[in-house]
Amino acid sequence: MSDGATVLWVDERSATGGTGATEGDGPERLERAGYAVARSTPDSVADALAADRPECAVCDTGALSAAEAVEAVEAVEESAHAPPVVVFARDGGESLAHRTVAAGADEYVPASSDRVLVDAVDRAVDRGRASERGRGAKRRLDALFADTPDPVIEYAFVDGRPIVESVNRAFVETFGYDRAVAVGEPLNDLVVPEGKRDEAASLDERVHAGERLHVQIERETTDGSREFLFRNIPVESGERAAGYAVYVDITDQKERERRLREQNERLDEFASVIGHDLRNPMGAVKHRIEMARRTGDDRHLDDALSALDRMDELLRDLLRMARQGEKLGETEPVSLAEVARTAWDHIATGESSLVVTEDATVVADRGRLTQLLENLFVNSVEHGSTSPRSHAPEHGAAGDEPGTVEVRVGVDGDGRVVVEDDGRGIPVADRGEVFESGFSTATDGTGYGLAIVRQVARAHGWEAAVTESAEGGARFEFRGVEFAD
Image (cartoon, rainbow, N blue to C red):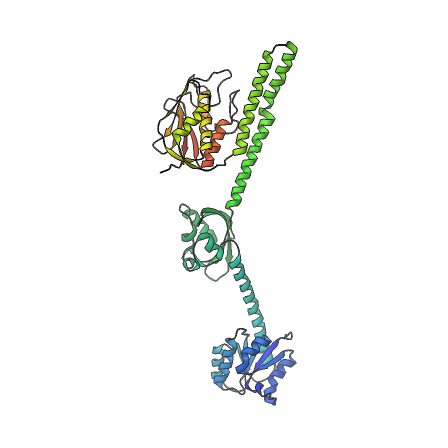
């Protein structure tokens, strides 16, 4: 039972080395039981505890007054290394037992049979070891709690709400609340953004029920709203629901996943064009060259050149999408009217006209905004003729010549940037697809112009929508545009 554990025997006679029969029987009992016994007086107990690191201390009251016995127990309890204390009472009665136990003694043992003392020390050593294991586990948990790189909150439910009992360093850095401020506050009041209260209340119900959760949530931090993987670790704590809430920031991971999806989508677009869209003009080139060889008619070569131009147009639009995607350069306040006129000058507009109904200063990447407007203008001029409204953007029939349209650019009363024309418009059935890559029913349309428009809008954080102008033409609206003061 002893495993060679060290016991510190504390009595006044240890200083004189006395070995009377009544003095030596206690230590001898422990030695016979396999314990290593060190000796100390009450005055030197702190040094002996530090030097010998005993697993139990026995206070022999034989040569001590009641007050001295109590002081000896207190000296052990107040030391840096405080093992369990057994009082070995040669004299004294119930009063001494009460006083020494109140001072911190674990057991009070009358000086009687061999086994009474040994059994008491065995129990004390077992309790000490169990306590040390518990303290060790607590120290390890505290170190893990303090040093983990993810924000962690220790909580307990009070009146149905999770109340903060402790926070680690990462929580302070991420959410901006010092421990002194956070402790005692409802957790949701510190981290739940506006608009997420109902969601948080529903989550609290599951946490209160003791569920081990792994849920993606959004929380408010010093850097704004960010996405987290929320992990609930419930802990048995009597009547109150309690545990640890761990917040693993996955914002950057989600952004990488989004970019990867976009890259995969662009690869799919490449595959689609190379595997399908380029096949038809390539076949046309081969056919026309073969016909020119057979007939000697050079007009077939003109058709072959037209097909090559078509291939070049497809590749140009596709490469533009693949290279730029939803990336922005530097944003700055720019004049909507100025950028619109620049974009208009970049394209062949024929007899069509541009009208800026209202200028505004918007915060944008000038080059990407120019690109957006160029594609909208091309769409209006080439596919928005005022002939019968039977086709959508990029839906002109083969051989149609662009008509004359008026294109208007401005800002409406709801703060939306608007580009509209008085052409033939977009059928309602097609409006949900016009921004999709490759969507076109025209034989000469690439299907990528309006997809580029959507890319540029998304890069700025704008929402693009298509509807109908007052004259029945196409109307493109952009919500969420930031205007400079």
